[in-house]
Amino acid sequence: MALPKIEEFRDLSDEELSEQILTIKKELFELRMQKATRQLEKSHLVRHAKHKMAQLMMLEGERALKSEK
Image (tube, rainbow, N blue to C red):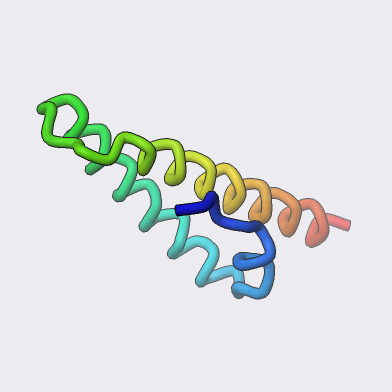
């Protein structure tokens, strides 16, 4: 499974972007809980979720800067 590409998220609306961020935060929490209880079998999913979160947060920040101008 490859890391997600940022192009996949660029066409999302602001509401969809916020929704995706919230979803990824919940997913990351669940993955951390599974890791803590040693139930996580696919440890690479944590890295993918963090990568996706960083991309979404960067897009949100870019849009906030554009709206300020």
